[in-house]
Length: 85
Image (cartoon, rainbow, N blue to C red; front, side, top):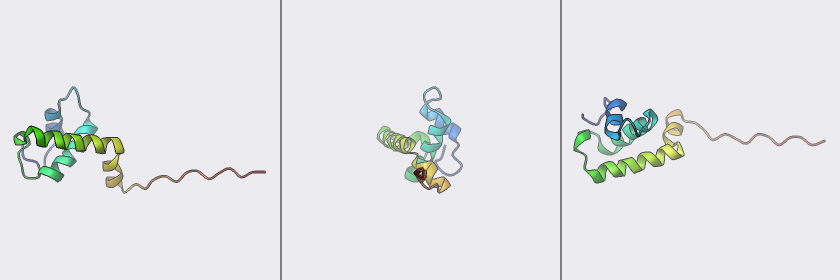
C-alpha cells in the first residue's frame, strides 16, 4: 500500500498489530508516515525507518501534538483566583 493521503488507518493498524495498537495510535502513525515517507510502499520501509516513525508516533501520542495542531487548540488558561473577602 502506497503511503499517501489515501492510506487508510486500517492498513497502518494492520502493520502495527491490531492487538497491540489503538485506532488513535494508527491515526497518529499514519500522519507520521505521510510526513516522512510519502510516495513509498508501506511494506517496503526498512526496520530502522519503521522504528523511527514508531518512536515519533509515540512522542506525538504522548504529547498530544497531532490533536493540538489539527484543531488549532490553544492551551487552556488557568481559572481566575477566587476573590477574597
